[in-house]
Image (tube, rainbow, N blue to C red):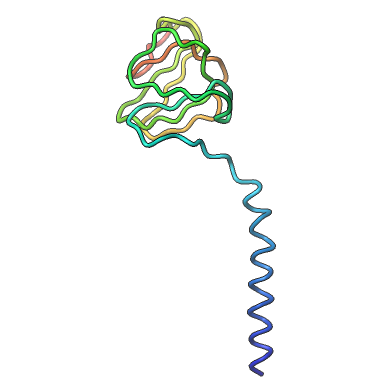
Length: 118
């Protein structure tokens, strides 16, 4: 009887390890961002390509950024156009929020909520 119980435990453990790699393969990629009070940004969607950390407003970001992780204490606004021009697309990134893709290339960013189009 004892051997059957041991076999079942081994079989279940083996089944669990067979399922885990498949589940982790579908997990979303997490950005690697140093523990700073600022916003980690990347030039491509999904935290790819060049990493740049923003600590203060940036009126002109070159090259522009496409993804971000906000580790600051405040909301940040990313603007499609340079110099915080809200005539293009804008995207607020709240404290603790991670954005895989803005849907546009951000050319400027600053703390605070985004200005709204008139």
